[in-house]
Length: 93
Image 1: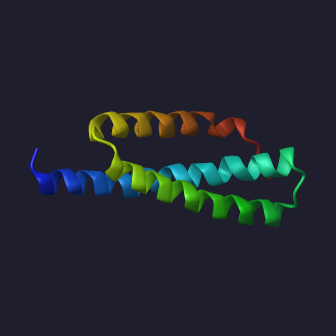
Image 2 (image 1 turned 60 degrees about the vertical axis):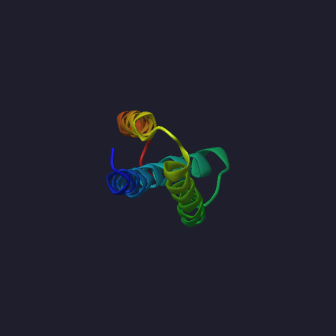
């Protein structure tokens, strides 16, 4: 594969996959903070949003650090799908 195509694919995987994973992690972390740590709703949402930035940047860095982008993209895709499937089990606040 040409080098510029690989960079574009890695960038798309990092941006789209990182955004989806961080958005889903915000929901799950908020639920965990409210139910597990008995935090207030506002504090739990703010804390979950801040932690999701770390996840986004970690995914972004990993997308350029791994050698095989196809295996990494498939792993990211299936983990996001599993998170979407488990989303109805998280109760609303």
